[in-house]
Image (cartoon, helix red, strand yellow):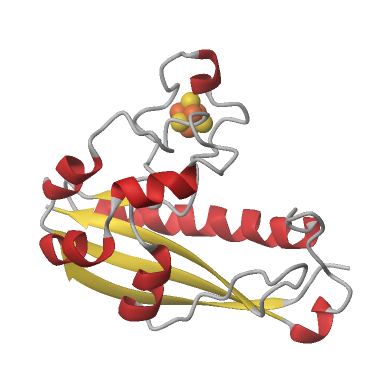
Length: 187
Ligand code: SF4
């Protein structure tokens, strides 16, 4: 049975210099990215074909957008992570909400000239990314870098800028809320 949930959008902003000083550390987060299945497999992901700090420094501010997904606790009974695999019901929710978030980000990006959004996680436009074949990105005009891949500290951003505590999976237990964090870089 599908898990019921509600969502809310939380927003914040930060001048880019302050953001870099407090919340960005590319070498540190590159190490976490190495454990991800998308490392070196998607153009949106680490290691990037840009220098993250130079890229961020070409903007003046960043708006942070968090989509909090609040899961119905009663429906989580019996839903567990096995061997760190996210359960299908949760993946379905994430797929739906990532699409919704993408639509919102595209709309906001279009409304602000020269802005560019950073997505929560990997680019999923193509099922199999051309990076796996050593070929250029098929849709560079649509692909957006992952906020994690530019070295952003998602937990700290969530807690200090958006006021939402990140809950991680504890063993096989699913947390009561999930959060997708994105950025909108502005010149
Ligand atoms: S648009 Fe396609 S080829 Fe480009 S990064 Fe995304 S998945 Fe890879």
